[in-house]
Length: 138
Image (cartoon, helix red, strand yellow):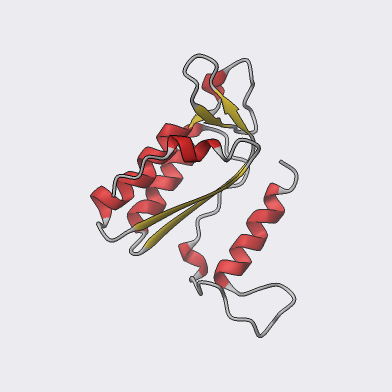
């Protein structure tokens, strides 16, 4: 998505350095830049899920996962798919199954640090579908 890279920049700056145009404004979370893993234009589901897993294992308090892209509905299983730059609507397997993302986020709280608070922020056409897919386990 053309605006996704810009959105990543804004989120990164906001979480680590503060709000653009307001030099005296404190960072929203004040995170050290090394605590933000940024993945732009990923090439595979494995790359995305490995990055989420790495971030989850490093997290000590809150895990924030932000996705900006297109969402599709798998025609055979009525499940949410998150697209990659190379995704094709006629090849559902070329996208990321949302259940895999959900699994990695939930596992962060179960296996890495019981005190972790997962947060998922998404911007895509079918982001409301996440509410149907998300069944909190905590």
